[in-house]
Length: 147
Image (cartoon, rainbow, N blue to C red):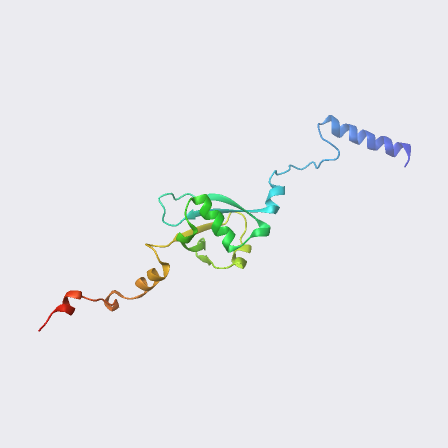
């Protein structure tokens, strides 16, 4: 390299350091989340029809994205038992059913947990699926009547 090229490089580096810039660092602003965003997925989670309408943000490791992991972390953060969750929904209207659904999620998507109503979810489905007129009933007093 010629001596004039070296002088030009030195002047350039000296000018950068005088302006408070390091010649080895990028000159564009750096977002502090760049390292963590590649490792973690941030989701917004809440309970459907809860008194608390706000979402909370949770972080999941991208290498551990699974339905079960999302359920565990969400329940832990919201203070509910995983057994009380009947469904998970990506808002506005998509049910999350398997690991592949979870792996397609992107940062800051909104997830809603639908809780089981009064116990067994299977009973709830059966009870709401039957029209009221077709709901079987048994009157014990009528069975004891004699004619």
